Length: 537
Image (cartoon, rainbow, N blue to C red; front, side):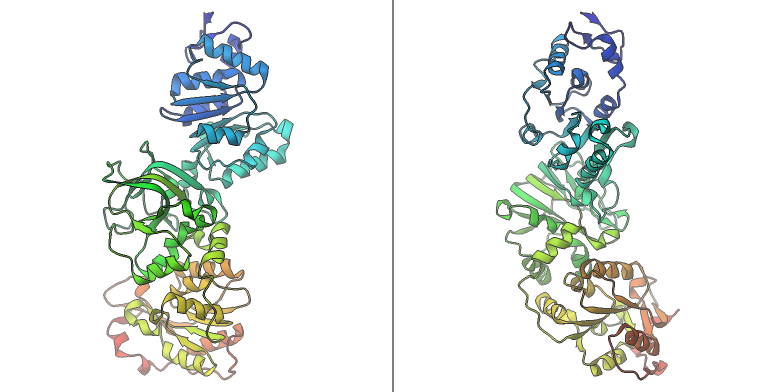
């Protein structure tokens, strides 16, 4: 045996049938080697399917020092060369070399790897397309389009993306992909898929509730080795609300297998628009095997849930407890679904989220109520934002046969029964429409009276459109906007209705039939409760 002159590798050249010095040197800077060394570290469990003569595995064991390294190579010649290289470098007892042709899914189940390295010429597309990779943190895949063809390579890459992996451009080429889940989850959730559709199981997970009341506050999940789990984070629009928490020691332990529910919001508006984001996973798990659903409170509280929180979870068909982690806690096993819903582009929800809500949410609630429904905000008062002149609007709609419905006066079951029964819905823009959207149907006519043009308007419209299959009519007909005298927060704005324009728009949308023009609002009709707190802009 002779020592390689290449100090970068330091591998000994084995006697035949092992790889020669030229082969070892040629592999030193191969993309697969660079990628594997970039993602494998001490403590990792690594599975390599395909050896390329064992050079990559030998370098990994010497330089990255994973906890375990299992190599499968059923090809007799390549397996013999790898075995010779391992023996020559004192690695034969540290690398588990398998020469049988075991299916990849069985190997993954047995080895439970953190990282998969796949170089199986001609088989990569089929293996990736049908294999559950949910337990993996990273993959290094060599593609062989000269054998499988370009379409098969594209399908394999799409399969990786669908399971939440994103390519690391610094150590990847067109034919060798190094991809990580963390890199994927550093981007906002995507309704088309990506990490939003992934189920990741984390052993000895560490759950950290927020400690501060700031808009963004460190919170979330780390794995048993202390690594941040980005799939557990909460995004709103394109902003990460829960950046990585500090690595504090857990103060409590929770046994069993739990589903990560994410961040629980207390207010109705954010609860219904963000808290259900991960419950789509219930359609993909054995609920009987779960100990419960674990949330962290947005403000770090441990107070009991409110009545509508409990009712919502009951309407979701939950048969397991809901628990809040009030302190840093170690969880025996935590199943972490990606964020399948929320505020931003993800308001449309992933296909898996929409399917789960249709199958589960309030499925036993019977439609009850009139075919024409107006969802009002007039009972909330000017301190909650709203529409000036809404009572006049309600009188016109009541004359058309609409029930004037104040959702805040009813439990969720009653609200949903009304929403299911209605054929024509007119609504003042507001959070009640997020609950309505979960049961919106394509045959319903929906018109939304915009009270303040903002991103919230777009999100409500996107939510309704995603579930109904068509967008609502947005009625933008304000004479002016009134701003709160002591606050410039847009959510407190009041929109003064241009009633003639509103009537014309509702007639054009086909939801009212009265052909007579609606009279304009008299300034004297604006109540003192409005002028005392707001001023026109």
